[in-house]
Length: 96
Image (tube, rainbow, N blue to C red; front, top):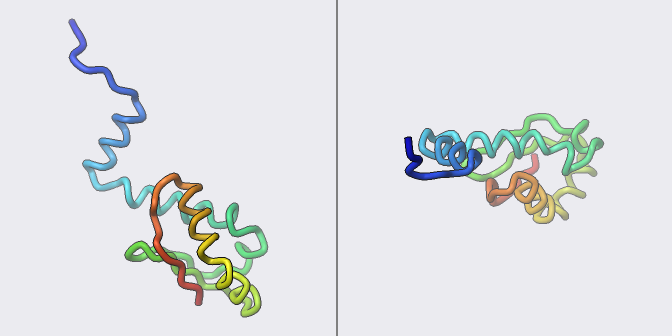
């Protein structure tokens, strides 16, 4: 039997996830999972609710002073989170 087309397994998995509408939720999950690694352990301990809606990351920060510090660096934080996932997942961060 002769092979018609050869593809890398990673390419086939990506195509399958995309066709089934699972690529975006998977990338969002990966981004949320990397919050502690990118933002830091102190931020992770002071984070309440964390979710993504319409390409916006919403993060409940329990410490007002920490929230202010993150407000000043949220563009950098957003870029690092997207880079960690390898895709443009979020376009803004709302801290509340």
